[in-house]
Image 1 (cartoon, rainbow, N blue to C red):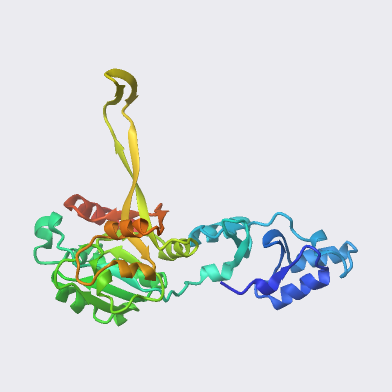
Image 2: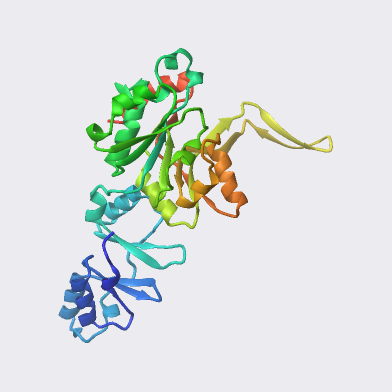
Length: 348
């Protein structure tokens, strides 16, 4: 995100001061702020139109500004920011925090560029895939072919295409097949390193095998998930919160084909006819802050829900990020067949 602070003027600023802010800033507009809150935006065109109306350079910038500029919450996903800017035909988008104050300005050109992230990624690929039966007898589940290539390759390529190139893969079952295929990651445009689990350590035990905790939040995903989630938007969401970790969740609906009865003390209270129940369930994708690593002992089996519960128990916070994008957990044969049927439509 470009530096925007030099483009800020106050509500008493003159046209001359607004011009100076536009020229010294890097976002081609001046932001009129009152106690950090956005009052309006001044463009070069606004100033020129003001001069044509007879407003002098010593006149007030608020008399030429747009008092109702488009802005967005900093938690709005990157692709939705881009869509909003296209819809409104704007090239700058002020980003507002939960207190209503400007904390950044996104530009259209920046959003079109693929951002580059230094944050490490951990792909959990050491499981046995027992529920897939004979399919994983000779091949680890992440190496099963979906859409003509290993599932794990699609996951790696998605990260690389979104600007994440610092990748760790945790391996255990038939680890050599994964290592021989991906090597050091150069072929895929990434740097890939491996975390070896000599025994099964659960869905979070690999965190305890890092030689030191990363300086930046770590993006973690299970190695059996096909999704079009924007990992950068997930990371932005996490960074905008005070949470120690963020869990991506998916809405799961169950249709009950019967009338559901609620009773009290043996008497009918209400009947809900064939309701649909809905819950958020873990999507197997997380952002883990550096402080979380101290909660995972080296070589001890532990699953991610237990780690998140430890955060909460220590009075920390875990943010929840709902996924609206395509998501499929390939845990059963039916899921594997569904992935084959949908792959080329989703991942063109």
